Length: 380
Image (cartoon, rainbow, N blue to C red):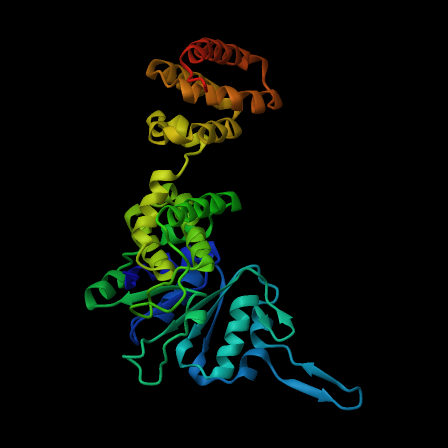
């Protein structure tokens, strides 16, 4: 787990950038990691800078400090990366050979990673950080990442063979898909819903943040608050992107592997739990009525999603959906809609032509409410 085909690198980069989660790519030398990062930046119209940890010292990243003894102050020269990205909304910084870096260079990288800061210069928040390195067993000078550093990334091991390289050279990765992911809007409410679902899974299964480093390899994640939140951000991108991409299986597989590279072996279980507990939107409910039957234990929240997201043009479908619920005898869901209906409908503006649907909805509600009152359990 935590592994992807070399032809899926750009999909992983798009997911990590949209989620704003730093990505670490593990793998051997000469397998196209750097080249694909450049290709991704070009396809998404972003600037890209490659900084090689083994070949620099800190002043190459943050600039030089010059002392003015007369004024008793120190000036920092403007860093090259700030010159390149200071006015950009988006961009890619690729920290290559990250785990080959000297300790003072690593300190500069971590400041850049955590705060987007180069000394006194602050990069825009939209600048995305990707790192790469060779596993210690493949590179004698490479070192393992301490847990405190490792948990700042989503880790992936890039598997490369000539078949997968040939697939990449032929364009096996759907360019439209990763560009679509890059252009998505993912709201904080979606991230929060996914995070709540992930936290509930951990609570239900008695899981706690890892107190020691139990990773079996460099690209296996470790569960803590930060990595779980990062996993939720990646899961949120998946939920928004799923209906917008052509290759949904690749999106799912890459997402699972990225989450594995954050929180470890529970990744597949988290995604299964997400699929089971995810509450559909108003649009999804009105496109597929049966979807609500999977969430009978969350009808109040479903009704809230439905009524808060309903649009003027949706009222004919809403009437049809409520009639369907009547026939199915789903009285609890109808009762939940009554509660949400009272909160949202009076605040919405109606055209005169839509009053017929408004009246139909009230008739269904009144009929169903009478029945619901007769069968509703009472507390004794």
